[in-house]
Length: 249
Image (cartoon, rainbow, N blue to C red):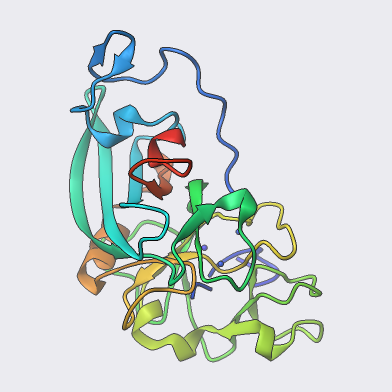
């Protein structure tokens, strides 16, 4: 993910500011260490530069920057170690993945980086056990992506005069894709015009996304029932290697 302009909040995906990640501190990554490096057999979060400081994490990993599919895994930190709780196949942007700061709106690319998860939303009622703040989509719910609007990259109830309908998502029209979703904090806290708006973790459509990350409907329900805002979950999006490697974040 409230403002709905006033709340300052929820969702478009088919692209909010990355949560700033503190600079990695040498030796701060936990896990098995060999010759000063975290062993490659360690769980993925233990090989990352930063996990956001909480005790829950979602990783969305693609094989490479041109990939449109990959894996989403959700993790819990227990007893000083990261433990995989669930995993599902994932879809990414139709034109692959790109570093968040280099992303441009309308390119159908998924931004890579480490992001907060401001809130959840959906057309359907929240799954049983959901503790995340959940905004229910109505016929008046839009996600503004108009670069000239004061509501850029925000959910609004009723379209503001300065947000053109053709530059916004009418959330209810996305059907099952937005049955349940989490707002990804890309370009969200301090939006940069032209970088992109409405990036979500949401339910699969027919194929690749316009920049979001999507998973099967059952996996999305499981994630919402699992996610606990008190444990400060984040999402890390990246590739297996290269400049956008998920372990960099």
